[in-house]
Amino acid sequence: MEKVTWSGLTHPGRFRKNNEDSFLAINLSGKEVQLLGKEGSAAPAEGDYVFAVSDGMGGANSGEFASRIAVDFITRKLPESFRLGATGLSQGYHDFLTELFEEVNKEMASM
View 1 (tube, rainbow, N blue to C red):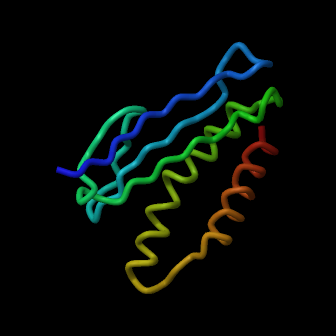
View 2 (tube, one colour; view 1 turned 45 degrees about the horizontal axis):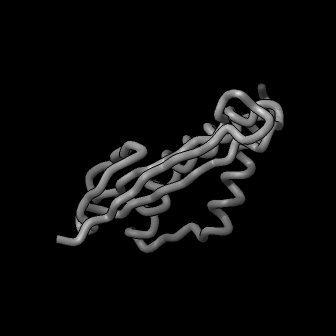
């Protein structure tokens, strides 16, 4: 049986003691968004898998917040994008990424 296998590992880098990176693994099915752990495997037919690593900005202030905001945004907005595509409306990747960067910037500016 064919399987998708994943494993996520990040490193704090040279400048920080704490790891500011964020890892995301989700399964988008027609019914739900399922958060997956940093390691696992599943059948490809069980849904669409999305994996992302958001870097904590290499020693910049508040890197952990920026990386977490990016992962949270992807978790919220990507299913919406899939639903729009299913109804014939689509949001291009350029629009999605632009909205992602604007959201992270807005959230960071309000801190």
